[in-house]
Amino acid sequence: MISEGLRTAFELLVSFDWEIYQIILLSLVISLSATLAAGVPGVLFGILVSIGRFKGKRLVKVLLFTSMGVPPVVMGLIVLLLAIGPLRPLDLVFTRTAMFFAQFLLVLPIIAGSIVISSEKTQVRVLETATTLGARRKHKVGLLVRETKPFIFMSLILAFSRAIAEVGAVMLVGGNIKGETRVMTTFIAMNTSMGQFGTSIAMGIILLFVAFLIHLALSRFRRDFYG
Amino acid sequence: MTKSLLGLTAVLSLFLALAGCRGERVTIVTTTSLDNSGLLEEILPHFEAEHGIRTRIVAVGTGAAIQMGRLGETDILLVHDPALEQEFMDEGFGALRQTIVYNDFLIVGPDALPAKTLADALGLIHGNLTFYSRGDDSGTHARELFLWETFGYDIDGFGGWYKETGQGMGSTMNMASTTAGYTLTDRGTYLAMRANLHIGVAYENPEDEGLHNLYSIIKVSSEIRGGDGEAARVFFDWFTSAATVNMIGEYRVDGERLFIPLEE
Image (cartoon, rainbow over all chains, first blue to last red; front, side):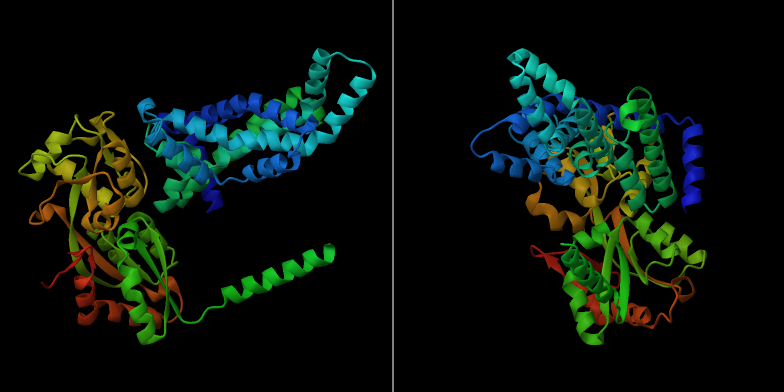
């Protein structure tokens, strides 16, 4: 089945079927844009929680870590209910925009949470050193972001991996509509439910191959991370 | 810490091993439409009590169901795509097949279509109204394609009003409900879901044979499935017996019968 999948994957790619390319492209565009868009508020929030000294910090962290585990299908349901309820006038139901928002919300806590988990100590140390050296507030922020960079990079990779791999949210809010909101994971789920296991495996292989290419590209200018 | 983790792993493994033990059991792969109707939950306990054989239901589209049958992953198929079923039998994968009951397909949507015939109804939808197609090689999808073709339409030329979801009956009907679209559904799933839908019957005609939906039971050949197939045969005989068919015919949701025995 796997070797048949490899062959089918190759056939899908060289058939230059526009539908297949559109599906791959849509997956990438939605997951990449959701990750990058969530990156800014996610990183800021992560840094604030890391260096902040405030009452209820423990609770905030517990809540943040909990929300890292929100099942995609639940996030999809929340977005869908918003789209058919209060946000009805925006006409978001079964659109690419809704898929973007669902993934945006899904990865936001993952970015913020993983920054706290990985670099809280580093950030606190950087801040202390900077304060001891008498750095200005403006410089402190710049310093923090610079020192946290590898951790930011890691959190974005985590977030993108989660986004590109999830099926529950995009299936619910996008609806897997052919030529409109079908992405790699919903394509795989659909073909599996149709008993076309070979095609499913093929698209799974393509998904991994695309992720491989992205990491290959990233590894060229982030040698510290991949070296 | 390590010790307690090891202990936990041991307990979990034991649990999995025990859960894997199987008594006599019949695996039934059914279409989502039949599963959504709630019929099997109602009647299968009678079988289990009578024969002491446990049952296990897996609900997928008819296309996938047939595929699982080919792979020998199931004892029984409950499906509704006569053409595919015939092919399955011709290829030698099935040992026994019997068509038991039928219900009808209907078009659901936000408004009743002012149509006297099915052709009129499809004509009103074509190009004007959002229509969700299952698009998943299911029995319902096969019928929908057949109907468009019968009335002279070419699906390849359909525009943005025609949306293929590639999902099950329940999900597709929910999508139609959320966006005030139309779709073709079997009556059973519609009745089972009616309470939660914002759409209703847009066109129905139980007399039109083009809208008849035939359900069959297939016992997968023992050579394909493995084992002696005895439990599966007992199930097949029970399911096709007059008493069971009668029970299926009497099954009601909100006072409405979902399935009509072929004999009636």
